[in-house]
Length: 145
Image (cartoon, rainbow, N blue to C red; front, side, top):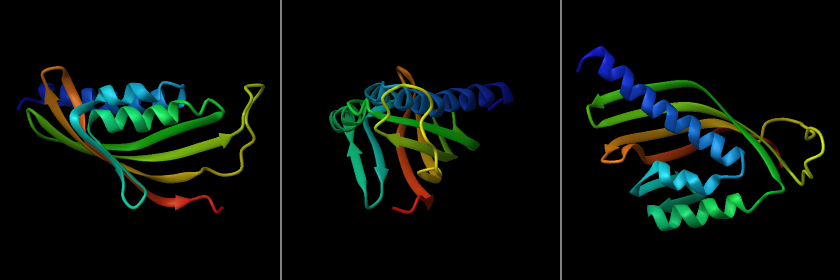
């Protein structure tokens, strides 16, 4: 594979990662389902697993309904590996800031991030473009309750 093709694949996968964060942070979480394959999986082992479009729409729709929640998913240290012309894998660190009960007036109070962890992603090229086939969330640090 030539370097330009590799860069284009990496950029498409990066765009998925960033779109996912933007949608959840701006009240459009249900749109994330469109970033997955029809049989895509989102899992946080021991906490939640959504498999397939129907479950993704339901789970992400429940998150979207939480309009009183303000969150920002800050992604960094993205590492992508293009496996071939149709498959890639990646890991990105995520720091999640969240405040529940915000009424939209001024900034939210901030103590510490809710979580610092990783998204481990698998990407696949489809007829509709690049999509997540799997996203696994793991926490390295969590805010004490």
